[in-house]
Length: 356
Image 1 (cartoon, rainbow, N blue to C red):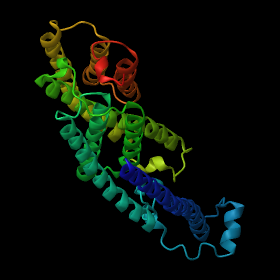
Image 2 (cartoon, rainbow, N blue to C red; image 1 turned 30 degrees about the vertical axis):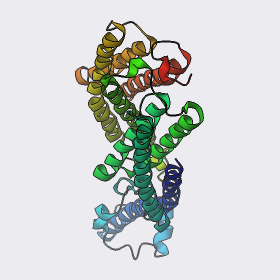
Image 3 (cartoon, rainbow, N blue to C red; image 1 turned 45 degrees about the horizontal axis):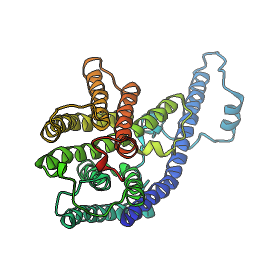
């Protein structure tokens, strides 16, 4: 967890130093915009001059402030006015996270290196827990949490090296630090043998699938939350009220964030479906019935229904954007409620997995 914390601070430093550089970029953009405006005014003045020199007898209407500037020679060195298309615009310059700042670039390198190191140590820790317990390392809520957070980081590291998703780093590492802190301080249990009902190959299959989904759902939710903020920024940018140096300018477009969340959920939903089905089969082997409306299995099914509604709405009704994101967040809320509240505070057949 300590190495993840270092990575989080390094990502934060990259954003902070990069934001300082983005102020310089924004100033340059504003300067370019002002130059474009002045050039347009100069073009109007040149047209007025041409009309006057042609001796057409028409009186040119030129603003007094432009006349004053012309008298002072302010437009003598403007050059060719036909090059207006070469002037930079606000949309043509999207700064990177580091903003070209040397300190931000250094912090970004440290962040990536420590992220990889932390992830490797995380995986080793999960494996060592399994070795110490002489079983798979997801027999209780603490082990489920550390294994699920490892999956979340595996997805981020994959996105980092395949898609260059360094913009997600500060959010991913911050989330994992919070999750591991909760696991260590609240959910921790010593490695111990499991109750007889868990001595089954289905523990490997059923719970492993749930662990994979927990990590995938978490990363998809991060992308969904970022989408909502980015969408708001893009709306303000269209209205001209967004700051050119805003941090949200340095994350992908809202459309891309929405697509990232959708693809992760589309990948993980079949695995969650298998989780529910495998749990039912295991329940029949252990308790003699496929479904007993146990609180944990009921909320697992509710989570499945919400995510199914999300995917169905996108596929059939073309739901995208804010409405679909809200449904996805509701699905993750159901998952978290089942994960923490039901497992810890509600008595049921899955109570052995909690911290009681």
